[in-house]
Length: 169
Image (tube, rainbow, N blue to C red):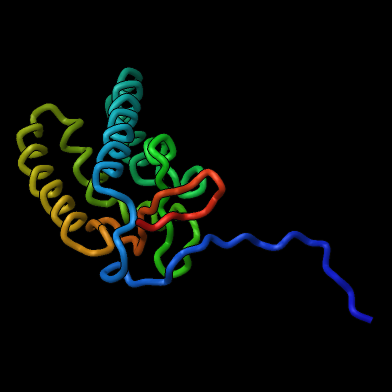
């Protein structure tokens, strides 16, 4: 006699298995920039709120939040959630977890301490401009639209539809 399991099946996202260097462009650059701008405002607010208590506390809170934000809310930072994007693990197509989020956000996490220390603002500006240029160049020039952080974290940013499926342009 054959029994049927009543346990719900795990839903997997419909994604194309692809290397981060190949395949179609996933999330449009302008959407990614808008989501990052929202996330930057939130990280900056967290820094200043934490710094009101104690400056090093604000710095730690901002760096940690910037690192794990893409692993929260099933692969969506607040900015990505508002804009309709999701970060997925490239090889599995599952939402980005905390480990991948930390890896993909290393370039930004390294820049935050410089922004939080008044004397180092000049160093911050000197450091952030090349990082932003490199990130933008990679997103615009690679077919997959990946940036340095996506390469480090082995992730992709895709448009996320309300029905829970990933959309590829």
